[in-house]
Length: 156
Length: 136
Image (cartoon, rainbow over all chains, first blue to last red; front, side, top):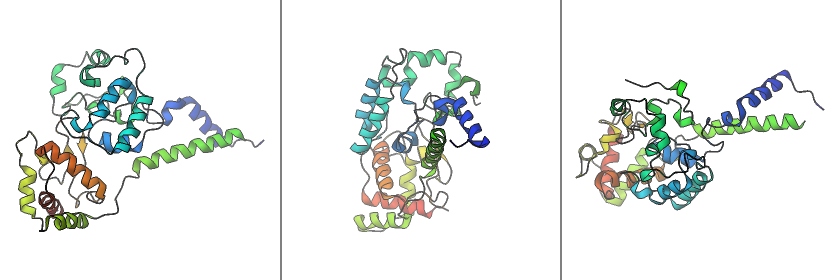
């Protein structure tokens, strides 16, 4: 058997330490993200990790893309189907995410309110934040699925 | 042996995922060709000053094109409801713009519905494209 070079050994060790998540887009993002999800959904808003909403919510959202929270976000049927299957396959099943939030907005989930309970109401209204859906205003690596609270920087 | 193959495989996955993130570049069309396409459908030339007025005006709703794309759209815009950054729309500043026919059609369809609650006419699209192309 070939001996692994020191570089390969270090690489393998690093991979092992990072675990499967670090290989993808970060802690909350599945390893495989369909390019259509980034191109279409993340053109207008944070690339929300699918695990933040339950499957039933994602299905409703994807059925009504022509009336998507005030905008027309309609897509080709093939893309709708591709993105929906991925969202549903990776949807939240953890007990707190299993509940379907009002209007299927993940920002209306009970866990979202609790996680943000220390954030003053005025902060959400700042021009630099603008909306609770704008995760990356404070979670700078939100698009990679990284929401680590130690990396939160609330803008002025 | 198995280990080494696995490492090569993981490196390949890492490379591919980084490529897919950056592969979205300039398409096979050009801003001039996109303008010509809509001018042909409209049967007349697009007018940049008419396009500018159309772009900056509200059309009975809450938003104008400029609400998200800025005025003029030569700088980064900001989505009017989510706050997400939108790359500049003027091709002079952002060479990726108006180079992908499917993308041009899709966004005009969606965004006209957002701003006008209907699809735009061919001449409205030609005017707006003429305006965007005229920006330096």
